[in-house]
View 1: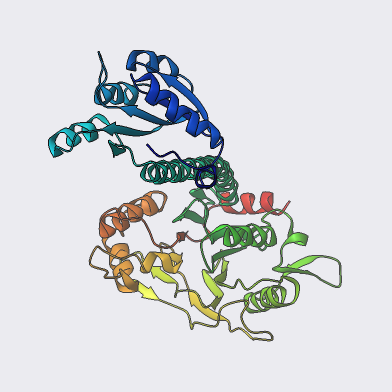
View 2 (view 1 turned 30 degrees about the vertical axis):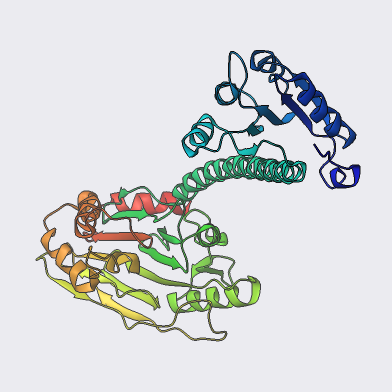
Length: 431
Protein backbone atom coordinates (compact mmCIF):
# COMPACT_ATOMS: atom_id res chain seq x y z
CA UNK A 1 0.00 0.00 0.00
CA UNK A 2 1.56 3.26 -1.14
CA UNK A 3 1.60 6.29 1.12
CA UNK A 4 1.33 9.95 0.37
CA UNK A 5 4.67 11.65 0.02
CA UNK A 6 5.32 14.85 1.98
CA UNK A 7 5.69 16.71 -1.35
CA UNK A 8 2.21 15.69 -2.48
CA UNK A 9 0.66 16.35 0.91
CA UNK A 10 2.29 19.75 1.05
CA UNK A 11 -0.10 20.81 -1.68
CA UNK A 12 -3.04 20.24 0.68
CA UNK A 13 -4.13 22.95 3.09
CA UNK A 14 -2.31 22.60 6.39
CA UNK A 15 -3.74 22.78 9.85
CA UNK A 16 -7.24 21.35 9.27
CA UNK A 17 -8.45 18.92 11.91
CA UNK A 18 -9.40 15.50 10.56
CA UNK A 19 -11.33 12.75 12.32
CA UNK A 20 -10.29 9.28 11.13
CA UNK A 21 -12.70 6.48 12.05
CA UNK A 22 -11.77 2.85 11.34
CA UNK A 23 -12.18 -0.29 13.41
CA UNK A 24 -8.86 -1.52 12.00
CA UNK A 25 -6.14 -0.19 14.28
CA UNK A 26 -3.50 -0.64 11.57
CA UNK A 27 -5.48 1.22 8.90
CA UNK A 28 -6.39 3.95 11.37
CA UNK A 29 -2.80 4.46 12.49
CA UNK A 30 -1.47 4.41 8.93
CA UNK A 31 -3.90 7.05 7.74
CA UNK A 32 -3.43 9.15 10.89
CA UNK A 33 0.35 9.06 10.61
CA UNK A 34 0.25 9.98 6.94
CA UNK A 35 -2.08 12.93 7.52
CA UNK A 36 -0.04 14.16 10.49
CA UNK A 37 3.11 14.21 8.37
CA UNK A 38 1.22 16.40 5.93
CA UNK A 39 0.51 18.92 8.67
CA UNK A 40 -3.01 17.93 9.64
CA UNK A 41 -4.19 17.64 13.19
CA UNK A 42 -5.69 14.16 13.43
CA UNK A 43 -8.03 12.50 15.88
CA UNK A 44 -8.55 8.74 15.58
CA UNK A 45 -11.49 6.64 16.74
CA UNK A 46 -12.03 2.87 16.53
CA UNK A 47 -15.85 2.96 16.62
CA UNK A 48 -18.58 5.30 15.49
CA UNK A 49 -19.79 5.69 19.09
CA UNK A 50 -16.33 6.84 20.15
CA UNK A 51 -16.11 9.17 17.13
CA UNK A 52 -19.41 10.87 18.03
CA UNK A 53 -17.79 12.01 21.25
CA UNK A 54 -15.16 13.88 19.24
CA UNK A 55 -17.73 15.50 16.93
CA UNK A 56 -18.58 18.15 19.48
CA UNK A 57 -15.25 19.74 18.51
CA UNK A 58 -16.13 22.47 15.96
CA UNK A 59 -12.57 22.47 14.59
CA UNK A 60 -13.05 19.09 12.94
CA UNK A 61 -13.55 19.99 9.30
CA UNK A 62 -13.04 16.60 7.62
CA UNK A 63 -14.22 13.13 8.58
CA UNK A 64 -12.83 10.02 6.89
CA UNK A 65 -14.76 6.97 8.00
CA UNK A 66 -14.76 3.28 7.16
CA UNK A 67 -18.09 1.92 5.94
CA UNK A 68 -18.17 -1.46 7.65
CA UNK A 69 -17.78 -1.14 11.42
CA UNK A 70 -19.33 -3.11 14.29
CA UNK A 71 -22.36 -1.59 15.95
CA UNK A 72 -22.93 1.61 13.99
CA UNK A 73 -21.72 1.44 10.41
CA UNK A 74 -20.37 4.33 8.32
CA UNK A 75 -23.69 5.57 6.84
CA UNK A 76 -25.39 5.39 10.25
CA UNK A 77 -22.49 7.31 11.77
CA UNK A 78 -22.74 9.92 8.98
CA UNK A 79 -26.48 10.36 9.58
CA UNK A 80 -25.82 10.80 13.31
CA UNK A 81 -23.21 13.47 12.58
CA UNK A 82 -25.57 15.34 10.27
CA UNK A 83 -28.22 15.31 13.00
CA UNK A 84 -25.87 17.11 15.41
CA UNK A 85 -25.92 20.86 15.89
CA UNK A 86 -22.37 21.54 14.72
CA UNK A 87 -20.47 23.19 11.87
CA UNK A 88 -20.54 21.30 8.63
CA UNK A 89 -17.76 18.74 8.07
CA UNK A 90 -16.87 17.16 4.76
CA UNK A 91 -17.59 13.44 5.12
CA UNK A 92 -15.71 10.80 3.07
CA UNK A 93 -16.76 7.14 3.29
CA UNK A 94 -14.19 4.44 2.59
CA UNK A 95 -15.88 1.37 1.18
CA UNK A 96 -15.31 -1.77 -0.82
CA UNK A 97 -18.93 -1.62 -2.02
CA UNK A 98 -19.55 -0.94 -5.68
CA UNK A 99 -23.31 -1.46 -5.63
CA UNK A 100 -25.07 1.77 -6.63
CA UNK A 101 -27.91 1.13 -4.21
CA UNK A 102 -25.44 0.97 -1.32
CA UNK A 103 -23.73 4.15 -2.44
CA UNK A 104 -27.11 5.83 -2.70
CA UNK A 105 -27.68 4.85 0.93
CA UNK A 106 -24.43 6.58 1.85
CA UNK A 107 -25.43 9.74 -0.03
CA UNK A 108 -28.86 9.71 1.60
CA UNK A 109 -27.14 9.51 4.98
CA UNK A 110 -25.22 12.70 4.16
CA UNK A 111 -21.90 11.51 2.81
CA UNK A 112 -20.12 13.92 0.49
CA UNK A 113 -17.73 11.56 -1.27
CA UNK A 114 -16.44 7.97 -1.47
CA UNK A 115 -13.07 6.26 -1.72
CA UNK A 116 -13.08 2.58 -2.65
CA UNK A 117 -10.77 -0.08 -1.33
CA UNK A 118 -8.02 -0.79 -1.98
CA UNK A 119 -7.27 2.85 -1.28
CA UNK A 120 -5.51 4.83 -3.96
CA UNK A 121 -3.76 7.45 -1.87
CA UNK A 122 -3.44 9.86 -4.75
CA UNK A 123 -7.21 9.66 -5.23
CA UNK A 124 -7.78 10.17 -1.52
CA UNK A 125 -5.48 13.18 -1.62
CA UNK A 126 -7.51 14.71 -4.45
CA UNK A 127 -10.80 14.04 -2.69
CA UNK A 128 -9.54 15.55 0.58
CA UNK A 129 -8.32 18.57 -1.36
CA UNK A 130 -11.73 18.87 -3.07
CA UNK A 131 -13.39 18.63 0.33
CA UNK A 132 -11.25 21.42 1.69
CA UNK A 133 -12.04 23.59 -1.32
CA UNK A 134 -15.73 23.07 -0.72
CA UNK A 135 -15.37 23.84 2.99
CA UNK A 136 -13.35 26.95 2.16
CA UNK A 137 -16.07 28.07 -0.26
CA UNK A 138 -18.69 27.41 2.40
CA UNK A 139 -16.69 29.43 4.88
CA UNK A 140 -16.32 32.24 2.36
CA UNK A 141 -20.03 32.09 1.65
CA UNK A 142 -20.82 32.19 5.38
CA UNK A 143 -18.56 35.21 5.78
CA UNK A 144 -20.17 36.96 2.84
CA UNK A 145 -23.59 36.09 4.21
CA UNK A 146 -22.56 37.49 7.58
CA UNK A 147 -21.36 40.69 5.93
CA UNK A 148 -24.61 40.92 3.95
CA UNK A 149 -26.70 40.32 7.06
CA UNK A 150 -24.69 42.88 9.01
CA UNK A 151 -25.05 45.38 6.17
CA UNK A 152 -28.77 44.68 5.89
CA UNK A 153 -29.13 45.15 9.63
CA UNK A 154 -27.31 48.47 9.40
CA UNK A 155 -29.43 49.49 6.41
CA UNK A 156 -32.59 48.55 8.30
CA UNK A 157 -31.46 50.69 11.21
CA UNK A 158 -30.68 53.57 8.84
CA UNK A 159 -34.01 53.07 7.07
CA UNK A 160 -35.83 53.04 10.41
CA UNK A 161 -34.08 56.25 11.45
CA UNK A 162 -34.90 57.83 8.08
CA UNK A 163 -38.53 56.76 8.42
CA UNK A 164 -38.68 58.39 11.84
CA UNK A 165 -37.03 61.53 10.50
CA UNK A 166 -39.41 61.62 7.53
CA UNK A 167 -42.39 61.15 9.84
CA UNK A 168 -41.19 64.13 11.87
CA UNK A 169 -40.54 66.07 8.66
CA UNK A 170 -44.10 65.32 7.55
CA UNK A 171 -45.44 66.65 10.84
CA UNK A 172 -43.34 69.77 10.44
CA UNK A 173 -44.48 70.24 6.85
CA UNK A 174 -48.11 69.81 7.82
CA UNK A 175 -47.60 72.43 10.52
CA UNK A 176 -46.84 74.89 7.70
CA UNK A 177 -50.32 74.30 6.32
CA UNK A 178 -53.20 76.47 7.48
CA UNK A 179 -56.18 74.85 9.23
CA UNK A 180 -58.37 72.83 6.88
CA UNK A 181 -61.07 75.48 7.18
CA UNK A 182 -61.17 79.04 8.46
CA UNK A 183 -64.25 81.25 8.60
CA UNK A 184 -63.21 84.88 8.16
CA UNK A 185 -66.75 86.21 7.82
CA UNK A 186 -66.55 87.71 4.35
CA UNK A 187 -64.67 84.65 3.16
CA UNK A 188 -64.19 81.05 4.16
CA UNK A 189 -60.91 79.36 3.27
CA UNK A 190 -60.51 75.59 2.93
CA UNK A 191 -57.16 73.97 2.20
CA UNK A 192 -55.76 70.46 1.91
CA UNK A 193 -52.43 68.80 1.13
CA UNK A 194 -52.08 65.11 0.22
CA UNK A 195 -48.47 64.08 -0.30
CA UNK A 196 -47.60 61.06 -2.44
CA UNK A 197 -44.69 60.30 -0.09
CA UNK A 198 -43.75 61.18 3.47
CA UNK A 199 -43.18 64.78 2.45
CA UNK A 200 -44.11 66.72 -0.63
CA UNK A 201 -43.51 69.81 -2.68
CA UNK A 202 -46.92 71.50 -2.58
CA UNK A 203 -47.86 74.46 -0.44
CA UNK A 204 -51.00 76.58 -0.06
CA UNK A 205 -51.83 79.43 2.26
CA UNK A 206 -53.13 82.95 2.74
CA UNK A 207 -52.13 86.19 4.40
CA UNK A 208 -53.77 89.59 4.96
CA UNK A 209 -52.71 92.42 2.67
CA UNK A 210 -54.66 95.09 4.48
CA UNK A 211 -57.85 95.36 6.48
CA UNK A 212 -59.88 94.82 3.32
CA UNK A 213 -57.62 92.74 1.07
CA UNK A 214 -56.50 89.14 1.33
CA UNK A 215 -53.70 87.27 -0.42
CA UNK A 216 -53.80 83.55 -1.19
CA UNK A 217 -51.28 81.35 -2.94
CA UNK A 218 -50.84 77.88 -4.34
CA UNK A 219 -47.31 76.55 -4.99
CA UNK A 220 -46.11 73.33 -6.61
CA UNK A 221 -42.35 72.77 -6.31
CA UNK A 222 -40.76 70.44 -8.87
CA UNK A 223 -40.39 66.92 -7.53
CA UNK A 224 -42.05 65.63 -4.40
CA UNK A 225 -39.24 64.50 -2.11
CA UNK A 226 -37.09 65.92 0.66
CA UNK A 227 -35.52 68.71 -1.43
CA UNK A 228 -38.94 69.85 -2.59
CA UNK A 229 -40.27 69.78 0.97
CA UNK A 230 -37.34 71.89 2.16
CA UNK A 231 -38.12 74.41 -0.56
CA UNK A 232 -41.77 74.60 0.56
CA UNK A 233 -40.51 75.36 4.06
CA UNK A 234 -38.36 78.16 2.67
CA UNK A 235 -41.24 79.57 0.64
CA UNK A 236 -43.64 79.31 3.56
CA UNK A 237 -41.35 81.59 5.52
CA UNK A 238 -41.51 84.14 2.70
CA UNK A 239 -45.29 84.49 3.04
CA UNK A 240 -45.63 85.34 6.72
CA UNK A 241 -49.25 85.96 7.69
CA UNK A 242 -48.37 87.88 10.86
CA UNK A 243 -45.20 89.86 10.03
CA UNK A 244 -45.48 91.96 6.85
CA UNK A 245 -41.82 92.98 7.07
CA UNK A 246 -40.92 89.29 6.65
CA UNK A 247 -43.36 88.72 3.79
CA UNK A 248 -41.88 88.89 0.30
CA UNK A 249 -45.12 90.42 -1.01
CA UNK A 250 -44.52 93.61 0.98
CA UNK A 251 -42.05 96.44 0.61
CA UNK A 252 -41.37 99.38 2.85
CA UNK A 253 -42.83 102.69 1.72
CA UNK A 254 -41.33 106.18 2.01
CA UNK A 255 -43.30 106.83 5.20
CA UNK A 256 -41.95 103.61 6.75
CA UNK A 257 -45.17 101.63 6.39
CA UNK A 258 -45.40 98.23 4.71
CA UNK A 259 -47.55 97.79 1.62
CA UNK A 260 -48.13 94.89 -0.72
CA UNK A 261 -46.67 95.04 -4.22
CA UNK A 262 -48.56 93.86 -7.28
CA UNK A 263 -48.70 90.03 -7.55
CA UNK A 264 -46.68 89.96 -10.79
CA UNK A 265 -43.94 92.04 -9.11
CA UNK A 266 -43.84 89.60 -6.20
CA UNK A 267 -43.56 86.59 -8.52
CA UNK A 268 -40.73 88.30 -10.43
CA UNK A 269 -39.02 88.88 -7.09
CA UNK A 270 -39.38 85.19 -6.31
CA UNK A 271 -37.89 84.34 -9.70
CA UNK A 272 -34.84 86.52 -9.01
CA UNK A 273 -34.46 85.00 -5.55
CA UNK A 274 -34.50 81.47 -6.96
CA UNK A 275 -31.90 82.21 -9.62
CA UNK A 276 -29.64 84.67 -7.80
CA UNK A 277 -29.67 83.61 -4.16
CA UNK A 278 -30.60 79.92 -4.09
CA UNK A 279 -28.10 77.53 -5.67
CA UNK A 280 -30.56 74.88 -6.80
CA UNK A 281 -32.02 73.33 -9.93
CA UNK A 282 -35.46 73.29 -8.35
CA UNK A 283 -38.22 75.44 -9.85
CA UNK A 284 -41.87 75.82 -9.02
CA UNK A 285 -45.22 76.86 -10.40
CA UNK A 286 -47.53 79.10 -8.46
CA UNK A 287 -50.52 81.38 -8.35
CA UNK A 288 -50.48 84.46 -6.15
CA UNK A 289 -53.91 86.11 -5.92
CA UNK A 290 -55.20 89.24 -4.17
CA UNK A 291 -58.90 89.54 -3.31
CA UNK A 292 -60.65 92.79 -2.44
CA UNK A 293 -63.01 91.70 0.32
CA UNK A 294 -65.36 94.63 -0.29
CA UNK A 295 -65.76 94.43 -4.06
CA UNK A 296 -64.83 90.82 -4.90
CA UNK A 297 -62.23 92.12 -7.34
CA UNK A 298 -59.49 89.56 -7.94
CA UNK A 299 -56.05 90.18 -9.36
CA UNK A 300 -53.52 87.39 -9.65
CA UNK A 301 -50.33 86.21 -11.29
CA UNK A 302 -50.25 82.71 -12.76
CA UNK A 303 -46.76 81.25 -13.18
CA UNK A 304 -46.88 77.84 -14.85
CA UNK A 305 -49.67 76.72 -12.53
CA UNK A 306 -52.99 75.19 -13.64
CA UNK A 307 -55.71 77.74 -14.41
CA UNK A 308 -57.81 78.78 -11.41
CA UNK A 309 -61.43 77.67 -11.43
CA UNK A 310 -64.39 79.69 -10.22
CA UNK A 311 -67.35 77.69 -8.92
CA UNK A 312 -70.30 80.05 -9.15
CA UNK A 313 -73.22 79.97 -6.76
CA UNK A 314 -75.39 78.49 -9.54
CA UNK A 315 -73.00 75.51 -9.90
CA UNK A 316 -71.32 76.61 -13.12
CA UNK A 317 -67.53 76.36 -13.34
CA UNK A 318 -65.42 78.90 -15.22
CA UNK A 319 -61.70 78.94 -15.97
CA UNK A 320 -59.77 82.17 -15.45
CA UNK A 321 -56.16 83.20 -15.99
CA UNK A 322 -53.75 83.72 -18.86
CA UNK A 323 -50.97 81.29 -17.91
CA UNK A 324 -47.31 82.21 -17.63
CA UNK A 325 -43.84 80.62 -17.20
CA UNK A 326 -42.72 78.77 -14.04
CA UNK A 327 -40.57 80.43 -11.40
CA UNK A 328 -36.86 79.70 -11.22
CA UNK A 329 -36.07 78.65 -14.78
CA UNK A 330 -35.10 81.82 -16.69
CA UNK A 331 -33.51 84.94 -15.25
CA UNK A 332 -35.09 88.31 -15.94
CA UNK A 333 -38.57 87.07 -16.85
CA UNK A 334 -41.53 89.39 -16.57
CA UNK A 335 -44.84 88.05 -15.36
CA UNK A 336 -48.35 89.19 -16.22
CA UNK A 337 -51.29 90.14 -14.06
CA UNK A 338 -54.76 88.70 -14.65
CA UNK A 339 -58.02 89.96 -13.21
CA UNK A 340 -61.39 88.41 -12.44
CA UNK A 341 -64.51 89.27 -10.52
CA UNK A 342 -66.01 87.19 -7.72
CA UNK A 343 -69.63 87.63 -6.76
CA UNK A 344 -71.00 86.72 -3.35
CA UNK A 345 -71.38 82.95 -3.23
CA UNK A 346 -68.59 82.31 -5.77
CA UNK A 347 -65.73 80.03 -4.81
CA UNK A 348 -62.21 80.41 -6.17
CA UNK A 349 -60.40 77.08 -6.51
CA UNK A 350 -56.59 76.90 -6.77
CA UNK A 351 -55.01 73.46 -7.19
CA UNK A 352 -51.78 71.71 -8.15
CA UNK A 353 -51.50 69.56 -11.26
CA UNK A 354 -51.45 66.50 -9.02
CA UNK A 355 -55.24 66.87 -8.90
CA UNK A 356 -55.86 66.88 -12.63
CA UNK A 357 -53.14 64.32 -13.35
CA UNK A 358 -54.71 61.65 -11.15
CA UNK A 359 -55.20 58.55 -13.28
CA UNK A 360 -57.70 55.73 -13.20
CA UNK A 361 -56.47 52.10 -13.48
CA UNK A 362 -56.53 52.35 -17.28
CA UNK A 363 -54.15 55.34 -17.20
CA UNK A 364 -56.75 57.98 -18.11
CA UNK A 365 -56.11 61.31 -16.39
CA UNK A 366 -58.87 63.21 -14.64
CA UNK A 367 -57.96 66.48 -16.41
CA UNK A 368 -59.32 69.96 -15.78
CA UNK A 369 -62.68 69.02 -17.29
CA UNK A 370 -62.93 66.10 -14.90
CA UNK A 371 -62.11 68.30 -11.92
CA UNK A 372 -64.64 70.88 -13.08
CA UNK A 373 -67.24 68.12 -13.31
CA UNK A 374 -66.49 67.04 -9.74
CA UNK A 375 -66.89 70.63 -8.56
CA UNK A 376 -70.23 70.92 -10.34
CA UNK A 377 -71.41 67.63 -8.84
CA UNK A 378 -70.48 68.84 -5.36
CA UNK A 379 -71.63 72.44 -5.78
CA UNK A 380 -74.14 72.10 -2.94
CA UNK A 381 -71.53 70.79 -0.48
CA UNK A 382 -70.49 73.49 2.04
CA UNK A 383 -66.94 74.74 1.66
CA UNK A 384 -65.86 73.37 5.04
CA UNK A 385 -66.68 69.84 3.77
CA UNK A 386 -65.96 70.28 0.07
CA UNK A 387 -62.29 69.30 0.03
CA UNK A 388 -62.90 66.12 2.02
CA UNK A 389 -65.62 65.20 -0.47
CA UNK A 390 -63.33 65.95 -3.41
CA UNK A 391 -60.57 63.81 -1.86
CA UNK A 392 -63.00 60.86 -1.64
CA UNK A 393 -64.01 61.44 -5.26
CA UNK A 394 -60.38 61.49 -6.39
CA UNK A 395 -59.68 58.23 -4.56
CA UNK A 396 -62.78 56.72 -6.13
CA UNK A 397 -61.56 57.82 -9.56
CA UNK A 398 -58.13 56.23 -8.97
CA UNK A 399 -59.75 53.20 -7.31
CA UNK A 400 -57.65 53.89 -4.21
CA UNK A 401 -54.34 53.71 -6.05
CA UNK A 402 -51.57 55.82 -4.53
CA UNK A 403 -51.36 59.32 -5.95
CA UNK A 404 -48.39 59.66 -8.31
CA UNK A 405 -47.88 63.32 -7.38
CA UNK A 406 -48.70 65.60 -4.49
CA UNK A 407 -52.28 66.87 -4.45
CA UNK A 408 -53.09 70.26 -2.95
CA UNK A 409 -56.08 72.59 -3.16
CA UNK A 410 -57.19 75.83 -1.59
CA UNK A 411 -60.76 77.12 -1.96
CA UNK A 412 -61.76 80.68 -1.16
CA UNK A 413 -65.50 81.03 -0.55
CA UNK A 414 -66.39 84.70 -1.13
CA UNK A 415 -69.51 85.85 0.75
CA UNK A 416 -69.07 89.60 0.34
CA UNK A 417 -68.17 92.18 2.92
CA UNK A 418 -71.46 92.14 4.79
CA UNK A 419 -70.19 90.94 8.16
CA UNK A 420 -67.83 92.81 10.51
CA UNK A 421 -66.27 89.50 11.66
CA UNK A 422 -63.88 89.45 8.74
CA UNK A 423 -62.47 92.91 9.44
CA UNK A 424 -61.72 92.18 13.07
CA UNK A 425 -59.88 88.99 12.15
CA UNK A 426 -57.91 90.76 9.46
CA UNK A 427 -56.95 93.42 12.01
CA UNK A 428 -55.76 90.71 14.42
CA UNK A 429 -53.68 89.02 11.71
CA UNK A 430 -52.05 92.32 10.79
CA UNK A 431 -51.30 93.23 14.39
